[in-house]
Length: 43
Image (cartoon, one colour):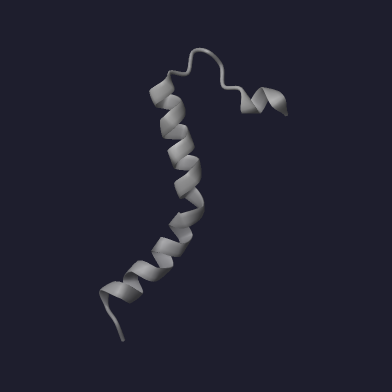
């Protein structure tokens, strides 16, 4: 498990930051997909 928490050295800091941002945003995507159409076209 600890190996997954320590990215290999070939990953640059920018790549690691992008992966962290993606992992943070992924759970929000389904909520956004559900809410955005409702906000765009209020019934």
